[in-house]
Length: 142
Image (tube, rainbow, N blue to C red; front, side, top):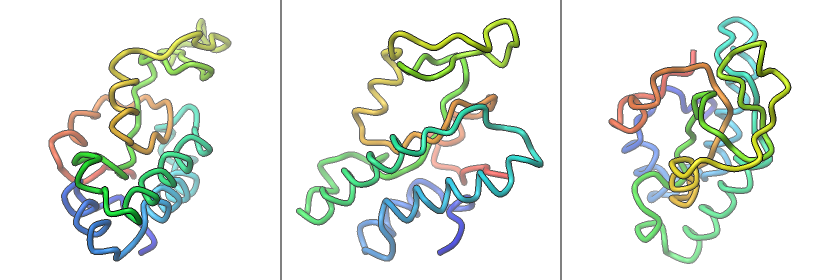
């Protein structure tokens, strides 16, 4: 599967459970799609590829051990964090040039909780539609 952008959270989870694809494939396919399309739509400010792929590996390891259900319904699902949510070591600019050099010294509690749910973070984004992901609607990538 080359693009996971039109899949809902439930469809990603079902595919992971059925081993139709891996969390790594979901993360890499999503990152590739962002790289391909973002030059046109300019929705992402900073990609966190290493973190996304590390989280995907954790999910794949849990699946291999039979623990997918224990991870929760968002395991392996890529997500974009709006650029006003601090993630330690990344730029948090609120899409403002005034803050373009600000690097967060901490991770916001809400981000930590989502990362603890073994999500695959993509990026710092100017998106305002993170709730769409949480409502299990298709992930809008383009």
